[in-house]
Length: 200
Image (cartoon, rainbow, N blue to C red; front, side, top):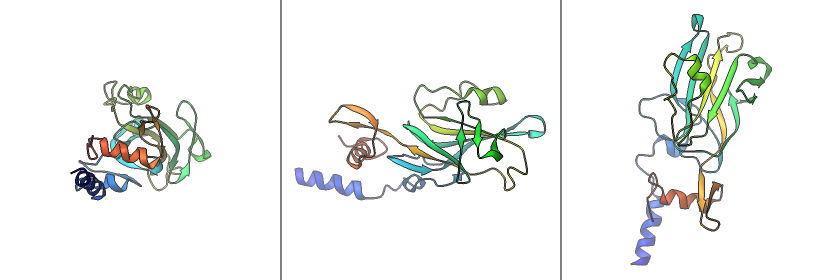
């Protein structure tokens, strides 16, 4: 019986989940759709995500705001954010300071997906629709604001991606829940998670 149970668990782990869809492969660009999968991230990886909010504000729609959902859970951190594969340097207020063409033209802020995270105040201040109740609790995301400039954005809004340190996982050896790229700990987390196999 024990052997059968273990074999069953292994077979289930190796079988593709029929509803995983895009989340199984990961997003490499920014996509749209009314029913996008939540992305689950283990280890450190460069990803994009589904676009979940767009808004134009200001005189003559001077500013364009976009939110991209990166993961359906808390992540450890955003390591590097890219615009069309160019790495961005961002100050503590979210202002892009490099590359120079984006200085004064792009703002990027993130939320790591905690259950208690707040709405981004800069977006709340600028928006007619986004308010303090729009917390996106449990969703890790990137918020970007672009100032209209044909010379800076000749091909339209850039694709925003990021290198992300993903899900924090429980380590039974230390009883700590922290970021880890240890394959065994990541597999254990997946096996026990509700979006995985829910095995005890």
